[in-house]
Image 1 (spheres, rainbow, N blue to C red):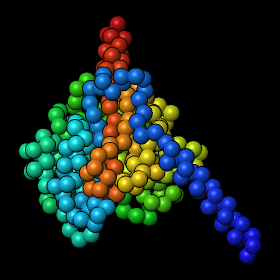
Image 2: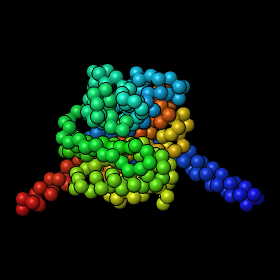
Image 3: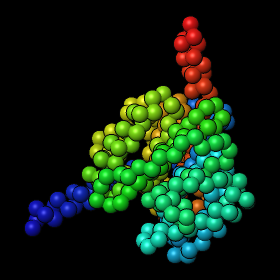
Image 4: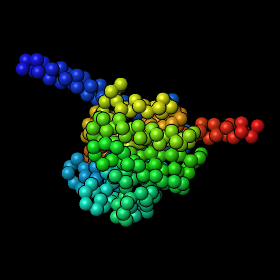
Length: 284
């Protein structure tokens, strides 16, 4: 019994240190000074917790107000639908389109839903070139959506996902997403969403992502009132694609969901220049 108590104390100390390190983590990452100022797009990810805030109140208009605060061109939403029954959508998409200027990418399996396994995508400008729906392996029903958007500077592939709570499931789910990335060739690609991975370093399932993805900074976004865990992430390839990352903070964001949104500032110019060089090489 003494040995078990000693092991329990050791785990508590180790977990306390981890929480302390995460608590002290930064909430903004910038590749270089002024990186965000030169961005072509702002992309965000937000687990809206089915529009139920930390005060226990269901309020889709409050959720929409937080989405509006982000000022993003592309927003990946998690938990956009009811979990059981007919899985009806929970947002007022008409309000979001008319007042926020964001259009919903239709991915739901039925007319009343917003997302695929709760994953939805909103975009401000551009055109949808392709949409795929992925079933992710694991003990829980999980999924991801893969959307090719024609935006400033070219076509951007957006993979929006909500990974599982179990570690072994997340590993398999990441492998599924990596396979999807490998099929898109040189197309600039984002993986974003609530990836549910709180572990850092070698134990993290996210270390399985290809080295071309970056940055991999873990900015705490959960729980919303006092974030200590980096559950919500945005990765991009090529590495220069994500110029700046930040956790969105406002009075509304602290209460509208149990997660805070995260934002990435996307620089498509290096990608466009590389595409031009590749075209010139082929023509030579």
